[in-house]
Amino acid sequence: MKPKTALPNVTTLEEADTNQFAQDIIQGLSGNPKTLSSKYFYDGTGSRLFQQIMDLPEYYLTRTETEIFTRQQEAITKAFCAPGSFDLVDLGSGDAAKTKILLRALVNQAVDFTYVPIDISLDAVQELQLSLADELPGLKVAPLTGDYFEALQQLQTQSTNRKVLLFLGSNIGNFSYPEIRNFLKNLRQYFVAGDQLLIGFDLKKDPRVIRSAYDDQAGITAEFNFNLLRRINQTFNGNFNLNHFKHFAEYNPVSGEMKSFLVSTHNQEVTLHDLDFNFKLSAWEAIHTESSFKFSESQIKELAQEANLQTEYVYTDSQEYFADVLFRVS
Ligand SMILES: C[S@@+](CC[C@H](N)C(=O)[O-])C[C@H]1O[C@@H](n2cnc3c(N)ncnc32)[C@H](O)[C@@H]1O
Image (cartoon, rainbow, N blue to C red):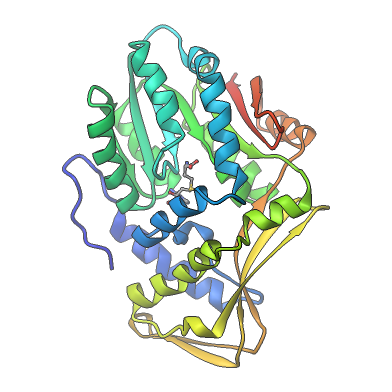
């Protein structure tokens, strides 16, 4: 289990998260097909592996969103500003490498705001807090660790500021369409009219470009996938043998769904001793570990309409691989 030490003003919800982790694992591995939620990829090692993924030549997502923020930072940050202070809430902040482009622009314009990074990974939040203290010492930061909605609920008790919420890096694509509808509906209870939402959507494109972003030559994405089993072994005293699994990724251009799996190469039995949980995998049975949906502009419009969100701006990169869409709550 991860240590419970936190920087003094990092609020940790970690114990509840570990119980939820256990429940989700048992449920996912008892099902047919077997699943593990992608939100558990990000322990310390997972967060560091994801940073390596973001530098891979195949992983266009970070490059393209970075291009959008670098080239259009002035327009984007101006669109956030209105009289009075606001909270810039970064859902799933990770290392916030891209958010920092916007943070620097806001700080340079002397805008009055508080940055609220939210992440389920305590390690990621702590590292981010240290790097912000170093790189942007004047920035007001109020980090929260935990699941998106637990953290948003906590934020509501702490601040009544106007909110500008960031959901970057195609994080929204990890949800299915019904989950996205539900997510946007749930988000609305934390918003009032005038609040804004900037969401990063990975757009539909050449299927081969998409597939190689999730199955890179260097095998870092495979390592990232295997790390989920390593994390389960460490957290719950399990005996997953990582050598008995293969990483496999496929893209379906009809549904726009990119799926990643861990495929069992043997008949095997796995025990998670701390949970008193034991299950069997047949040879070539797959555990579905991640879905990442890709969107067309019309699908984005439809989702916004259903959620009663008004589209203010669509920012895209030069290849039109990615779109950051700014919505206003009406
Ligand atoms: C793909 S990374 C994106 C990081 C960053 N926003 C970016 O665009 O580069 C996803 C981040 O979301 C966090 N995350 C995933 N599921 C979460 C959840 N349910 N609640 C809170 N954080 C979550 C992960 O820990 C991870 O740091």
